[in-house]
Length: 202
Image (cartoon, rainbow, N blue to C red; front, top):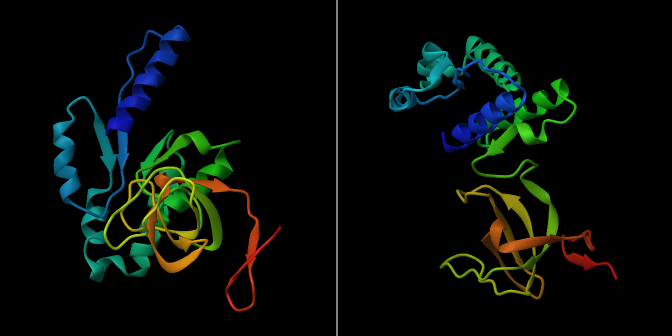
């Protein structure tokens, strides 16, 4: 809701600049499979929440979710989300990703119409990326990083705010998780050979 507040604040400023005197009604289309989220909306009196409560209840139960009708309903939900002015979602979710991709067909460029609470937009998994470490990272069970190190990895969602990668140091070692915020991407300079080993391009 913090991001929704910010979007509406900016929208209202643009309305004032354009000379509008009409009060903006803050509406949110809520798409969720957790019925408890609807109770949380009561904390936001200044907003009107729109959505399909009955669908939320059906989606929370596997018996009613995994049905032909459930499929039609989720497709409808994605369609509605794609027509919103702004989406706050998780792009690790297929629903969020599909809504964003469909939104791209309705706008010249929808890149500024979505905000992901977790992973960046993109395919999780290969291709492998080359990264330079910017910030130290030392968490037990994860890849230990120090600035300047080179790491190769592929995107994998595991709960980090901006997603994470599964990779290893270019100098060798085991494949482990590391957070995307600790590294910067470098231009592709290598490929995987037929044995799945790194083959650096000079």
